[in-house]
Image (cartoon, rainbow over all chains, first blue to last red; front, side, top):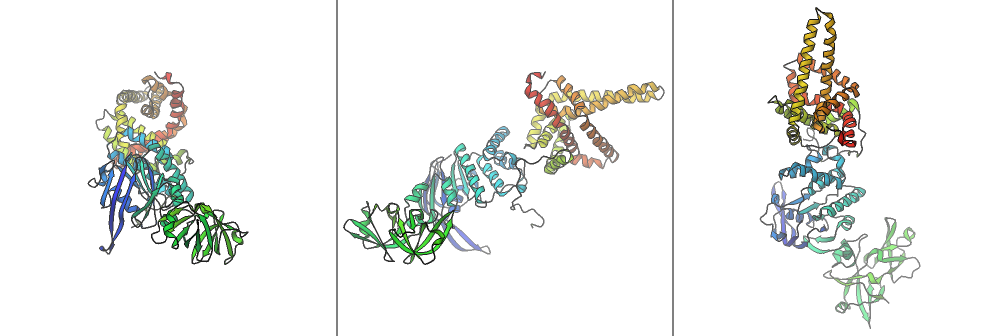
Length: 376
Length: 235
């Protein structure tokens, strides 16, 4: 186990055409993050944001500038094979001519460990991962899930300081993915290895991560616990990227009369509230972004809401209806009580839980308010 | 290229957690399909272990241990485990192996002696037949003796007693094994030196697998399980 410190990491890779480099892509751009000893951290972000490049840099497979330290020791001059890190890829990459047992033993044999210890370690990992019945089988007949279990086993039996997982379950169907996530949690609680898990699946990220780091364009946007990322995102990108259904920001103008603030939407609607924050005073009369999680704003059939809009689309997600509501030129997603009875273009009344409202700076996207205090 | 080579990225159908284990020839074929390359390697290691001749019994014992793991569908380090068992059981294999060989030699010579004398004195066919039965019994006892040596620690006398009893307990299996092995070795003798290729490639380990596959279940039932229940019974 090791504590990882990543500081000002920059990395580039070349796009080649017919063997010639045509473009340099900056995959990591001043990325900094500290990962505690024994922590399971999930790195997430949109495609192409540099998640895999980050893992490759930690593993020593990617050139970089900046620094990566494991327990205080700089890894810049340590080649990949000398770092005691294990990596599991999207494909299991098992040796096809070896059985699961031999695949798992391969790294340990190279470390010249006694055979008895190799067997003990493999049996323990196989028991945790529930792959004892696969040990004497070759990968050819194994399903994808079974292969990934073996690949995970192969990674953990080495007792690595850091376990790097690059979207290892992305090829699997949802139930199997959830099952393997549980197996990974078992492994983590048993071995306590510092684990960096890359995924773009939010369910996986929430299920696994002690902390979740959200990346965008090679930078770290925010790293925090799943709950805090949902409730108190640092900026509008994190707020809209993280959470299901996604939060969609709506432009509005912040106004003040006496002690009461109000949000004036593009469609003329208005919502008044009394915030505790003093930060809003600088935004009076300016455009801000209004954000609220779809589960915190409810479409009411009786028209007694504090906001209005026009229904654009109703969708069913996991037996709950959500309506996409047009407010001026923007769309907001709200939980719906009317469900499919709502027709496209019909006027809807929305009740927002203003204590869960987030306001963002329209220019920088930084969050300026979490929870708008009491509704007036 | 994928016309010629397997596509290893393609997922397989999955392996059942509790598959139905076939019995008899079907089960043997499943093991052979799964382990044929290991059998080839085991054959070479076995032949290497036999080179000093005096080590043949230890080599047979070590081979039986590896073959038991195949019959049980357990993983193994072939090279390492072979030599570990070879060293571990060397002395008692040597003792029992040469005792067995001596018994076979005495019985074989006695059969030849009485049979040649019986042409002039027909009454001597009786001891010749008795010696032949003894020879066959010693042969059949060896089917159980070496797998037991490899897998369980007992006193010398207990090994012999167990092998003797087991030869009658699973007499049907032994008979089938004899019916397979005697014609096979006759053919191999008749086709020598061409048959040496088969023996060098896989012959010994394949015959060993047939024997271990046949006798392992009774040994487990009557020796291992009894030993677990009554550990004080070993000498």
